[in-house]
Image (cartoon, rainbow, N blue to C red; front, side):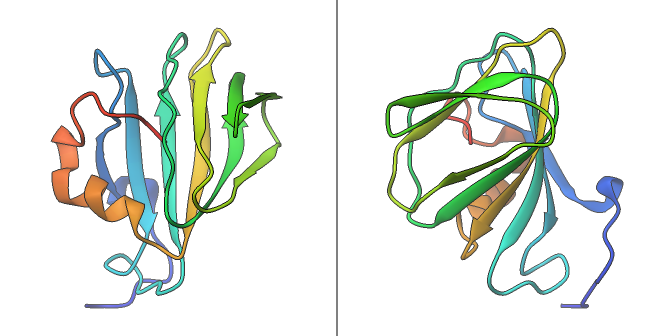
Length: 135
């Protein structure tokens, strides 16, 4: 594996998020395969207005940084309104879900630490999850 310290958006691993009707995308920007990151992974996700995800959880810590759009993030059954320049954290094992509630796509960075959940996305690529819950 060649180490890459700088990865452009277009060089990431891209696929469809598990959004009914194909209304979302993910892009893995940094992980073990792209750059050699051993302790985290970084993704860029986008979901279309009106999407509401299903509750799910991960065995790792999970964080988001909102770049564009408006939405609601539920962390352990508590709703938080989210928008640009906000960070969100879900501890390992805590149920969470996201909804895009504004008039434009909700675009956000995702960090998993340690890495792991992105590997299922990577393995399925364009067909990731079908209609399973989104991150």
